[in-house]
Every structure is written in C-alpha cells, then in structure tokens.
Image 1 (tube, rainbow, N blue to C red):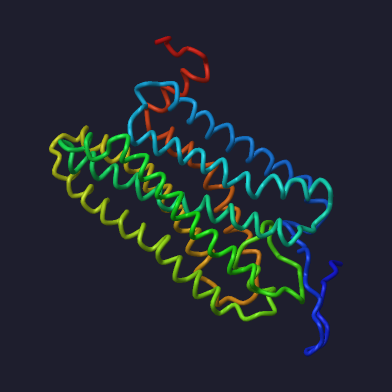
Image 2: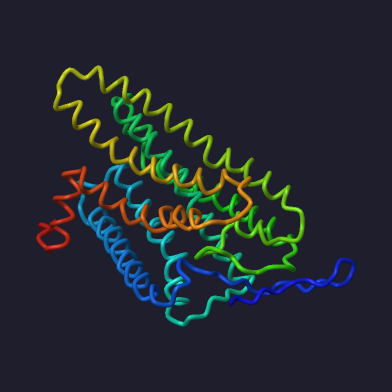
Length: 320
C-alpha cells in the first residue's frame, strides 16, 4: 500500500509535498521482470536504430541533403525522448523504489516538453522541405540552403525551450500538499494537475493555448504543404515518378500521424478527471513506440537509407 502525504486541516499550515510516488506500468511484482525486459529491449532497439540512421546520414555524402539533415535531427530527438523517460523507469523497476523528488519530476517534465516541442516544429520543417522539393523544384536549392536549414532547427529549439520553460515555471508555482501518488511511469502535466491543491485553471488554459500554437499551427502548415504536394504529384504523368514522390512523403506522414495522434489524446482530455491505464498506454505510444518505429518507417520505405545503412553497418562504405 502506497503512503500518501496529506496536508493538515484548512487554515493550518499545510505540509508541502517534497516527493511523488510513480506507480509505474504494473503494480504486480511478478510482471515487473517482464516489463523490464520488454522496455530495456525497446530502449536498445530505439537507440541502435536511430544512431544507425544518424551514422548513415553523417558518413554518406549522398545523404547530405536537407531531407536527411532533418531526419538526422529527428533521430537525435527520438534518442532524447526515450532517454528522458525509460531509463529512470527501468531503474525504479530494479530498485523497487517508486519515489521521485519534486525537483527531479519537474526536470523530467521540462526536458520531455522541450524535446516533444522541437519534434513538432521539425516535422513541420520536413513537410515544408517536401513542399519545396516537389512544388518549387527550380528554387529548392536556394530556398532550402544550409543556412535556412540551420535557422529552422534553431527556431524550433528556441520555441520549444520557451514553451517547456513556461510550463515548468507555471507548475512550480502550484502547491502540492495532498496525495502524492502519480498513476503513470513518468511526470507530466495532466497527472500533476490532478494532485495540486491550488487552482490549476490558469495552467490548463496555458496548456491549451500553447498547445494550439505548438501543435495546432504546425498541423495546419503540414496539411497545407501536403495538399499542395498531393496536387503536384497527381499532375506527374509517370507512374514511377508518382510512386517515388509519394514514398518519400508517406514515411513522414506516418510519423506525423503517430506523433500528433498520441499528443492529442494526451493533452486534449483534461476534462477526464481520473487518471487511467489509458494514459499509460498513450504514454507508451508517445515515449517508446513512436521513437522506436521512426527509424523502421523511414528505412523500410526508403531504398537510399536501406542501402547506405547496410553499408555503414557492414563497414563496406567506399572510402572517399
């Protein structure tokens, strides 16, 4: 039975919560080794897959293009996203210690929102890249120069940093003086809102408002880009040309669908008061499944990545 730190009667000095209890994915002791093995394997596959793609992009001159520059950045983000949540969960499974300090909880929350925020903008930059490549091929090299690529990535990090810092500062002003049990395997905003003994109305409005900017605006830009791309591709007379254009866009759209689909379910359901196991399932999709599938999605649908990845892994890359 988990102990909950509760505040004293109204009007008296309340005891501030200094640590939270993360229940994790399972409470049945017999299932913990199974969960550990599964998530440890998923973590290794994710790290290995994303670093392999990053290595292929770095060492193969043929992949030194804007699309692969953004894909390399996405691989770094995927490694970061899963590293923020899974290793700490695995260590709690091994140590049987479920507590996490208040400061550590907010730190995890900050880095999770920072990396997820960069992901939002990076996926938008990738959609813009495909729009320019297919709809504006004559001016593509000047409109998507190395300088433009770096500016897009830098702006993505700056906006995401501002968003993550805003949420972290805002939640640090809340009082936690009652229950301290989080029915999840990592610290996130909706679960912390449930535990606060202060009003979270402003925080929820902030989450909704910034969510529109961080997710709504990118989705509109991505959809607009792909409406133009689809119209341009359908005008291509060659079936082979259409297939090639759709294959490069299909991978990106799959990743966008998984990322934004799980994000909407996570943060746009603040009306559901009680945290449930559905939140954990969505959390797994967000933090584990999506980063693990991204390398697979991009490599399976892209012959260039497949070939160059195989060369890197087998050491057969021609010296240049």
